[in-house]
Length: 240
Image 1 (cartoon, rainbow, N blue to C red):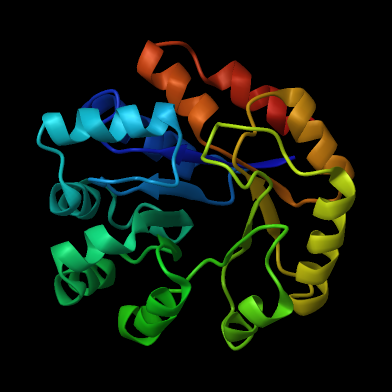
Image 2: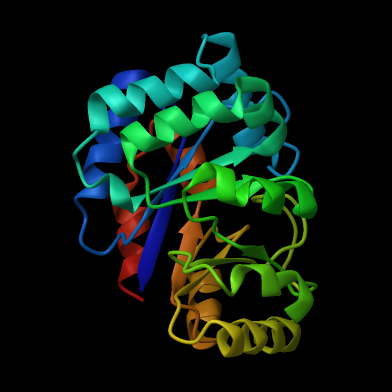
């Protein structure tokens, strides 16, 4: 099963996080690596990721510092596999033009941007980087329609409507029905499940529903912050 790991540069420290990122970018079974950008209010994230964001702020890792770090240390190292993840309010505070300058220099494969749907779509043409649609069981064909003219690298399916790493998933029939809608609208495009994928059992259920793979964030970051090995955990998911 394919896996998209989530990392926050600077967690647990700059050197270690960069090594994780470079290792993951070179991994053949990780089609993408989701790289989080620091946020002053990561309202979609659960306790683990919110704690990590707070640690970044306390240690001086801001939005711009992470972008510069990626440019200096990761440029020309398969950066098309990097999917940046950030919040609209932080991007606007940083500056859309300045953000675009960094995007042009880094060359990531996509951007997950969390914010009001209409405002996110309004920025689409200005950013010149593919937006990854973030969908749930509540998403409709109407909400997905604006992305039909695009060719995003994949669809990110939130299997839990709660924060990252928190709560149970909706009933499997609801997930299956919504997944079928997404696949009908975007035939051939990978669909990855995320939010609350903390163990092999959960990932196996999603594999049986024919998801392309899983995005692993809170469970991975928790191990990284605690200094625990992550390779065996990720290998278990890959071997499904």
